[in-house]
Image (cartoon, rainbow, N blue to C red):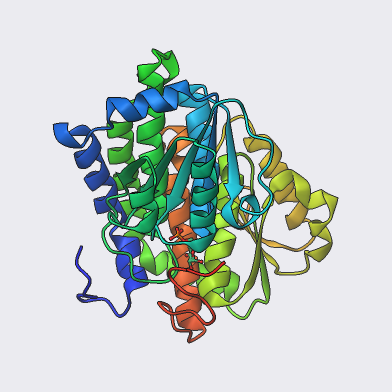
Amino acid sequence: DDVSKGTYDNYMLKEIDEQPAVLRRISEHYYHNEQASISSQLLTALQQADRLYIVAAGTSYHAGLVGKQLFEDLADVPVEVQLASEFGHHLPKLSAKPFFVFLSQSGETADSRQVLDKVRQLDCPTLTVTNVANSTLAREADFALPLCAGPEIAVASTKAYVAQIAVQAVIAQSLGIQKGLNAAKKIDIDNQLSLAANAIQTIVDQKDYLKQLTHDYFYNQIAAFFIGRGNGYATALEAALKLKEVSYIHAEGFAAGELKHGTIALIEEQTPVVAFVLEKSTAAHTRSNVKEVLSRGAHALIISKKDLSNANDQIVLADIDERLMPLVAIVPAQLFAYYAAVEHGNDVDQPRNLAKSVTVE
Ligand code: G6P
């Protein structure tokens, strides 16, 4: 990727389209290049930890929520995901052997830097996973790993989010293998990233359909809801953030089961609701939540890996390992945000009031 827009009108769409290439580059870097693999010192430090603390802000925080499940499943280590802006001021009681993972596209976010300073004073081991190799967080942590996403220029993060999930999967599986765990041996992350790249390509090749869906669901709407369970919930949070950032439509992401505890009061005729159904174990529950909103007049769209016909519309994703589905499931929502912003006449790459890198607390 280079920093020119090429044939694109703006960076956001270019960066969405680059996501298959980013996943292939991550595979290349971590699996097909001896020198770049994860160091044994890093794996040993991770193995010694009794708990991982993933610290991040904004979109990177949402990637951390997906990463938690990857680390817990593949490496059998408990994980807490913390917002840097909260954690820096209210450091909770830490476990006996904590290990800190900082996720940051820019490597410069002040909230995250503040936490890094604090935990270094406590002598805790630290890793930064960042897109900007020589950034402050990368320099100051004990270990640093690259996202390989290439320069991300649009303020709303897209390809760095997908890269953060992928690189966490690589680290989690390497740690699980180091620990001799079957869960890690049984999954081929290199192959899954290749499948995910193909699945994303299929989505970005359907732009006309996604543009039409965006118009049907979001044009002139004042609010939109995204729901899901497990990593579908994490995806819902990121999908809502994307829509807010660039289209300025008020959007909220919810754990699907929480709708009935309050938010369902906001559902009216034609309120857009997007449900991510990414896990077999909770699919029936989330589908019944979709039925509940439909019966109250919502305009509901399901994004899932199975053909589920009880919504107004659906997007069926390619079938890859459930734990990696967030890599693919976020992409239609990135395109909803993009096309809604364009249709509303907004500056897609430089949304009002936002900065790419927030260097004040
Ligand atoms: C800013 C950006 C967001 C980003 C967040 C964290 O608010 O506008 O897109 O997710 O910072 O940035 P980082 O560089 O630490 O990932």
